[in-house]
Each structure stands twice: as C-alpha cells, then as structure tokens.
Length: 502
Image (cartoon, rainbow, N blue to C red; front, side, top):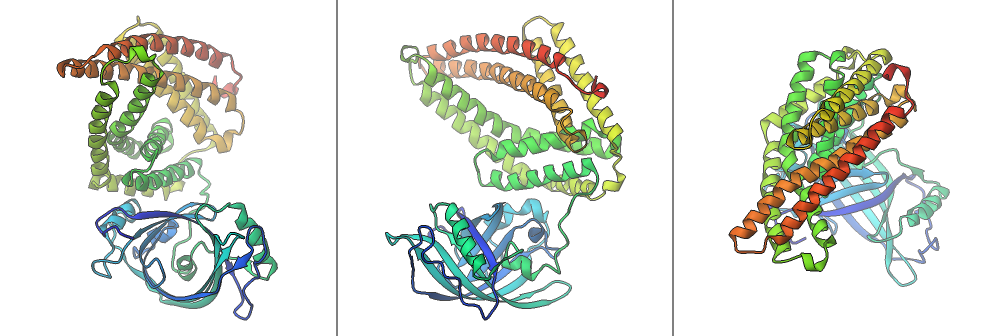
C-alpha cells in the first residue's frame, strides 16, 4: 500500500467462508475441484493482531472489526465492514503513528456506532497461518485455503482466553463466486464444520459482547431499529463518498421521521416530536448533496437527448463547473452534520427509543388507525391542489401531495408485519402517485437552475440558447407529469383496499 495514514483507506471486498476443523485432521483435499487443478506449496506466517472496540463492544455488536495487524503480506490497520453473506469490505491503512492509537480516518468512519466512546484495546490474537494458493489450469489463483491455529485473549470486565483451529477459503478477486460453493462441499465432506462465527474476534468475545437485538414484539420498535441500522450503515458510505449512500441515508432518515409523525399517538408525543424535528434537520443537511446528484444527472441526460443542432456553446462545460462547485459544498455540509454533536445526540435518542419497546403502544388496531389517517390526509392534500390554477402555488401544493403520498406509503411499509398482503395494491398505487409527483417536483426545481445557468452563460458571453430550449421543454414535461398523476390518482381511488382504510 502506498497511501499515507492521512489518506483515504484502500478498499477491498472479501468473499470467504470459515470452518472449524479438529486439531488432528488433515487439511481437506481440494484438487481437482471445479476450476482448481493445482495447489501451491504452503506459505507460513505468524500474524499478531490487536483489536479495538468500545468498552461495551459496540463495533462487535454491529459486525464490524477494527484491528492493527503485524505479519503477513497485508500488515497494517484493517477495518472490516459487513456487506452480506460471506462478504465483507476491508479498508486498509499502512502502519504509521502510535501503535495504540486508531488512525483518525478509520475512527471517523465508525463514529455513528461508537457515539464518541473511546476506542480501546479489546482483544489480542496470535495466528499461526499456513496458506495454500489454489490454482487453475493456467496457473491463475482462484482462491486461497488458510489453515489457522489461533490463540486469543480478550479484555473487558472478564478476561477470556481461548485456542482453536479454523480454516478459511477466500476467493481471489475476479473469481466466479460459484467456485466457493464447489469448494465448500468438498471441505464439509472432509469433516469440517461451517463456523457459526463471522470472525475470529467474534468467537473470542462471544461471552463478553451483549446479545444482538432480536425481534422485540413491537412492530414500531423493530421498524425504528431497522431504519437506525440503515442510517448507520450509510453514514459510513457518505463519509467515503460511496455511490448512492447520501440517497439511502436520506431515505432512512425520512422513513424514521415519517413513522414518528404517523404513529405519534403510539409514542410519547414529546419524544416523537423532538426526534422528528431533529431528523428534519438531518434531512436538510443531506438534501443539497442528493439534490445536486439528481439534478446534475438529469440535465446531462437531457442535453445528450437533444438534437445536435440544438446544443450551442459550452453547455456541458458550464454545467459541469456549476455542479462540481455545488457538489463540493453540499458534501462538506453533509460531513459537518455527521461530525456534529447534534447528530450524535440524535443517534443516542433513537437508540433509547428502540431499547424501550414496552413503552410503545402499537396494537394492530392503533396501527391501522394511523395508516387510515395518513390516507385521509393524502386525499385532503389532493383536493386542495385541485382548487388551484396552474402556477407556482399549484406546484407547491402538488409537492405537498407528494410528501403526503410518501408518508402514506411508508406507513403501509411499517405495518406490513400485521397487515400482510391487504395493502399491497393500495401501496403500489400510492407509490406510483409519489413517483410521478417526484418527477414533477424535480422538473420544477430544475427549471430554476436552468434559468440560473442561462443567466450565467449570458454573463460570460456564452451562448444561452440551449438552456432556453431545456427550460421550454421542462414546462411541457411538468404538464405531462401532472396529467399522469391525475390518472394514477383515479386508479388509486378504484383499487380494492381494507374497509378500515376507507
């Protein structure tokens, strides 16, 4: 690795499976299996790793591993993030600075989980590793089989020592994931057992780490917990500038806010109102970054779709310069929000809400009433918009309809565990209304940006003709979206739905 400790971590996706194997058993024979035709000579390493976590193992509870490892070809600081079955993303930084101080670039990425708690040495593992490269007929590495003898010591209130043997199969970059299934079968046939531990650290600290939260029996508490998890997961993505992370984090915050407002009567109203207000603030801080992404992509696509003879002047250059500046400012604003004490306090308050499901009154009857109220509010918003003449006021009213439709849809999603399929058709039609009005709103907002770009082009003695063309087309596109919404609203009125929703 060539990046300095102050630089961005190097990322790599791991696809691997772990197995327990008795100490007296030989390694499983994996040649020939699938594309594997040869096994390289063994390579022996001694790996010495110190793991960091909060004193109450917050990272371990989230399936996150943070370590400083000596030995092997990839020694350094490693942050491992869960991605899915058999998959984890590993972020690496080289060894530098004080050995007992976690690099700031990694500590910041897990701030949504640590919530300001100090990262301390939580465990120490020494691994005697024998690794075998598994090769195909062309001599290319398909996967690696590792045979590990591990000695571990965990700290905390109760010290814990352990020693065990495990084997791993890790796919090489670019290898077909199906290879893993073929090798998996052979390993199990040889007497190994699939490990129930996602990592060595998790195995060592199992007695020390609080049990993972299961289903609470409260529909709302479980929904809040799922959205809080999504918020934290995408917090890391936003900090790393990962694709779609801002959008997904904003969606999670909106879902939380919507549920707090829709089901306010099932909660402590003061708590619900306070959290909703803070989530509105968070959405506002994330909004510009997402809006810039959407608008930039939309306008670039529209320019590409124009006949060549209608694209006059440095249109792409003007747009690229404008949105690059906007994106940089919006990203900085989002990161400032995520680094703020206000955001940390919001996460703490959401955690507190999730941990007290008994205080939530969410029987089936109460949940259905709340969804019915959201349906009625949507109907009233549509009626109000219909009273207005086309123009700025109606555009604003249609945006309110969109927000009410989104809240109604999210309400249906929230109570899915107790509503079954009864709301499926209604929810689908509500989503269609929301989507169409989302397009309408994007067009309206983009129209203002086109005017700004046209004025800027004129001020710089550039040709503003194309921006005028796009502005004119946006008017027709908004009218088309409005007509489509009218038809979808009629479909929503005709669809079958439970009596309690009418």
